[in-house]
Length: 485
Length: 95
Image 1 (cartoon, rainbow over the protein chains, first blue to last red):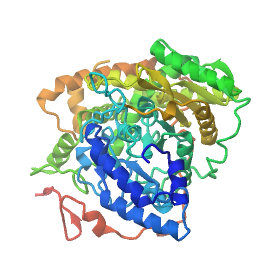
Image 2 (cartoon, rainbow over the protein chains, first blue to last red; image 1 turned 30 degrees about the horizontal axis):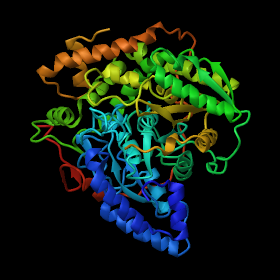
Image 3 (spheres, rainbow over the protein chains, first blue to last red; image 1 turned 90 degrees about the horizontal axis):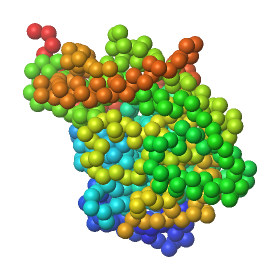
Image 4 (cartoon, each protein chain N blue to C red; image 1 turned 90 degrees about the vertical axis):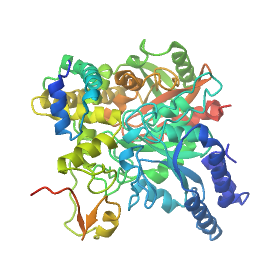
């Protein structure tokens, strides 16, 4: 059962071949037996999951089932879950039990899906390797046969690793600079970052509010569509939520791709890209040509400025968002504060990890008097130029295709000593967040036994087109069905 | 671009993060590297370019001035480090 997709499990439940209680039990046992080597979960909610599975079976017996009723999955531990610890991978929130559900969580609950627990992540989603979690690093299920353990990517490394290890068929995730696409690529799963505003941010612990966006991770594009059907939609509780109709993302999966105009941004096939990876990505593009797509080179002239703009804007927003963690209302508080300033400064010094502190300090610096115009305002102007690049490209083509990451999963510890080396992991993903457009990572081959992801970028609110393109690719390739040994 | 020790200490005060002396050299180095990366921005020509704060250029939505939330003080204070009589407790501020 653990090898099956959400769509397959949904059909098995519908046919009565298996109950949600049996399925949930099987996966919980699998997590218990296997997750010691991956550390992909921070919290496993066994009792709640079994109760939800029982309720789902009753709902189905009463004839009130939908595609998700009784299907197990997991939430990234950045989505607030009423009554269940929500840590964002931080000591600061290690004891935080939210008194409310994120909208995304409420949506899955309403659909009758069965949440098995909360997945591990880089602290406050700041990272590209899931090594900065207070709860320890996550190990990629791929490459375990090699001498050294590999990272799963990040920040949604727990979600990606749990799916690759077949502990869950699907998991929620978030993406501020590549945090869905890069771990999906490094773990050989399919992930989608939706258009900014498409998925509610209510109850999703904030990192950089103008960039953060929830999204989906599963083995197949079809499962991503099923997830997005539950997650997408207007939410009055999120002031930046898009008030637009939500299509049925599964309805267009089978449209033929004949005539699809594919653009290859030349800046994303640079010499920073591992040549063997490039070959896999170009092979994937050839599959699209066989499916009837036309391919041309395009340019995103300001692409090389994306990392620089991001590392002003994201830390600036983070420094403001994370000012709420003060040891007063919830979360960690230092022992025996001597005065109010000691309470604040020691709580934050002890509660945040190094990468989070670095970003708060950089952001505070960029926003401080004398530097605001040179850094923050300048970065916002460059952000406009980067957005304009995408707008111009989508006048010529329907989708853009590129690698997701410059190289496959790297060895744990390899990039932790220099933050800038880690930041460069996101060179192909970060501009998408600055522009706010949707993008996917789709399994597209292997290099040295490690998965390679194909990035497909779409115009605003064209998630259906991306899912269609990914689904058609998965009808003629088998990369998404490979499992780690 | 490098950040001086004095600037770093000032920023840490603004960010309310206590720094121990032994952390400072490594942080100076890391932040200087990050700022050098960010300095690429200065080469970009942004004359007559409007800053972009929100990818969809959306403006703040307004809603009717009606009560939509109920008071949940007990639920919120149940997870607080220290409360008394419905108040959050902090060290004494005024002697």
